[in-house]
Image (cartoon, rainbow, N blue to C red; front, side, top):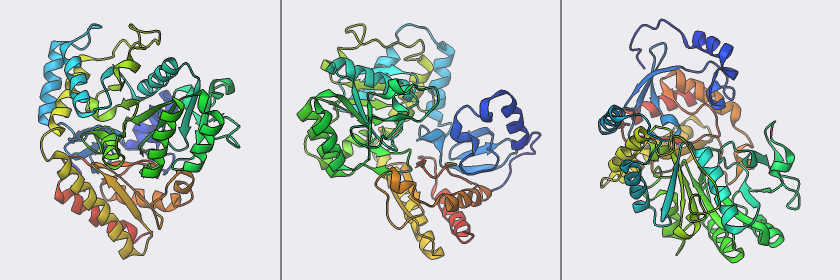
Length: 437
């Protein structure tokens, strides 16, 4: 891709400066390029489907701020809404009409949610949802799945123990073992293990938290039998089913991933839903919601405490509300899904032509691909191989002006701003890159 201006500071120089004052040189670990090697790109600006780095190099962007930029960067309607809100005031520490409008817009598209609480990050929303579930059920045990990421709260930074009778072990220093003693980690899409866990501990399980489409082991769907049985077991044992839709919410469908499963599983709905990313349109904003009966446990109505100074921030809610209004327009998701499917089909075709095993999947504006013969179903199979090949492919694509996630276990995102020409250019780059592997 062409450069747009003469850079005065290189990415390498900025990274050196950053490492002197920021741990690892970044404010979120994956940005450091540790998984793929090389120097992170310091982004100077973005517009539409493109980002421009400190050296003036332009890239077709398939990260989209890790999902929020479903309309692309700098969408006129969103930009206008944010500028108008900023002129009115950055933050009040008091309620506003706009936060009510945003919550109403979310609830309108998600039938399982009757009330919603806004917060500032996905981690905060997931942490609060777990506390709410424990408060509502009077139980302590949390069940999660290996490969699903729900933020960096202590109770969630856990890896599986040696067996179902053994609870998880911390995956981060600074997390005491006693903090995760109430967290059980199971294998994603493993129905038999799920049934065994409920048979052993069903009366103690407060909630099961799961990504319906896991975006932190690339792109892995929960199978219909797995999701069906999960819903049945939670209902049978009085546990709450918490869907983490921080990534998939309003990204894979207007009704989020739960609307897709509701079409496949009669009567399906989660008990608690967690949202982020798209509902903020690129601003720090997330939410958790449930039925009125469950949400009544939350302060100031109930004993489960949660608060946040910037929750419902007026500029963030303006950004999110403008985004939701745009993606609610007729035909939006049909067009976005077709575009994403063309990209994934093209990548698979490029792999076949190059003799490289490559398989992909997508839904709405979210996609993933693996250097494998078939789609993985859990974390173990995702991590079984292909990392070295992915790293070479990542850099070959970056050199050709295509910015993919700098780790093989992260999903990718297509926006409404990506044109047919952008997809064509991406596939042309992929054909060339795959021939070098």
